[in-house]
Amino acid sequence: MKKKKLLTLVLALGLATSTAFIGCSKDTVENAGDKIKNGTEDVGDAAKRGIEDVGEGIKDVGEAGVGLWDKVTDDSMTYNEDDFKKEIEKKGYKLTEIEDTKSLLSVENDDYTINGDRLSIYEYDESAKSTLEGDLKSITDNGMMINGNKTSWTKAAHIYKKGRLVVIYDGNNESILTTLKDILGEPLL
Image (tube, rainbow, N blue to C red; front, side, top):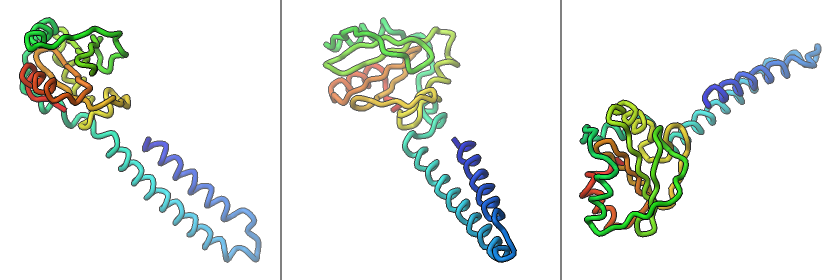
């Protein structure tokens, strides 16, 4: 994105400079310096706007690599999807399997509904801790980008990590949030 902005600025400067010299005759030579100065100021203003636009873009999507892995407190790789499903059912919830959506992370996901909200479970191999770490680092601090892809949520993403699982709950049901916290620990997001 920055390369495109820089290229645009360079092209604008080149265009402004060449425009200033085209048509220079004896009468317009005096104005050429003013045209170059104005063109340079226009390019400078465009550069400032471009930098502001990039800053706004970062605010919109969050920062990758800053966050979620740093919040992990459970670094074990033993807890798995079967363990989670048993615990959630003991708490009185039924997971209804639905068609899996495209995986947001580097491993396949299993998708469920729980009281009408989507819950996605990503299970990593026991030896794939570095892959899990990389995936969590790829999630921006506001959850709007994952692995470089912009993401949207129906309600709100709540992301948990326990053992070799990453669980993403897209909902706001307080009872479910409390249950997930009891089972999986504090959400990373």
